[in-house]
Image (cartoon, rainbow, N blue to C red; front, side, top):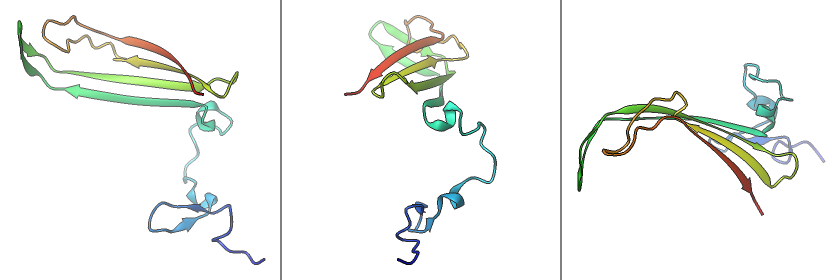
Length: 123
């Protein structure tokens, strides 16, 4: 059977306009940050960084009347599939990584960094 790009399993969709490219053509021009044998590139570790900036806002709810000052916080999450079983995943999340002490509601306590550990089981 003659070679055809349409039937070649090594060809992957580019995602735009139906154009198809081989996996070699979709590789970036720069070297990866970690060698392929590292966990970050193997898909075992899934890191995520996020942040949020909240402007100052007024509150008027019953006895709670006032203004909450604005704040900026950054969160980080990393999850890893445990090698013991494929259906187990451990995830650690650090909310407010930089420990920016702030208040999210009038009358609420000032909060800082929060660390959350989760074990996910799929079945």
